[in-house]
Image (cartoon, rainbow, N blue to C red; front, side, top):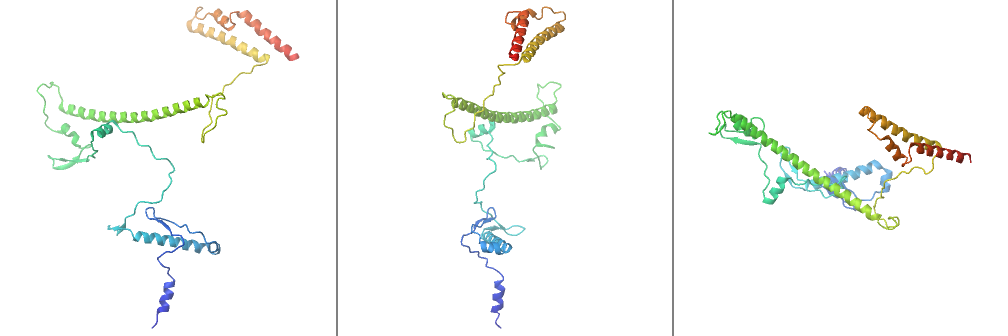
Length: 311
């Protein structure tokens, strides 16, 4: 019986596991991604979009599975696991890399002396109990001297010496010392960051000064790429000419302020006639002319303003 036709028809239903394209697929097994750089076939894309997308996705998945089967594997309770290599696709970062923290005082000392960092185990062996106990915390090894039933006391110790309290105070002082050193390291790191910001502000201030040091105050100088516009302090000037009513209100405001200062000083000191020299205050405001001359000058300005308005 010839079954070649049946086998051929059955094999035609399944495509080959080997993906062949004009532009080879870019397979990154580290990220489990496949990039297809083949140009889109407009006829197939427009005629049957769903079938075209399925075929493209099938080719990418087939290439990725074939790449995974070619990787070395290691046994596990759930079955063989493929060892993924390092990714080859360079992905951009949304934010810059974090800046390394400045070394602490101990880290600088260890680097100078060549001391290697060693992680201490949380459990230590207790010879008396013959078991592993905590190094710190509840029932910790560091509280051994406080909880022992017999203590060694020096011969010259005072009568009221409490060895349990002394051991507890020594342990608490060590904890406080470590916390103080941690806070000092944090403050030192913040100070270094603050110094960098201060130097940055000084550089910006120096650059701004040099930019306006030319004869044209930097107006005709060539601008650099990405150079920001200088922001100066806007000064607010009062109007050179004002109405008669505004001048009158300003004079009254000055006189009322002086009167209020005198009354306030008298309230604070009681009778206090000598607290504030009223004549001296009026002399300073009127530039030595006196209060009558000050009022006469204010009236004269008001009369000039009225004549100017009629004209």
